[in-house]
Length: 120
Image 1 (tube, helix red, strand yellow):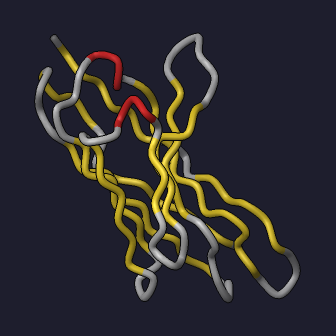
Image 2 (cartoon, rainbow, N blue to C red):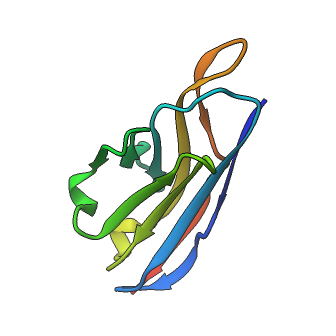
């Protein structure tokens, strides 16, 4: 069983910063890409940022220049540093581990989600 545990969400004022953390645990051989997605009320889940095992990153246009994703492959953790937050960033943020290779499968896993609320 592979488990993703997220932390770091909360309430922040407009223009503030938060850092999200996600740690993968369990029995697996490797994780391809790790990333963060978010879902605001009434909207579809969308990609925020992604980082491959080789360190290649991809960001949604709306967060470029404000958010930074990083990864520690040895610890199987991924961080999302979020700066200059605004109300549009309010959402539940989900950690994703892509193409996780275990003894029995290769598939994606999701965290339980962490709420980020930006107040104006």
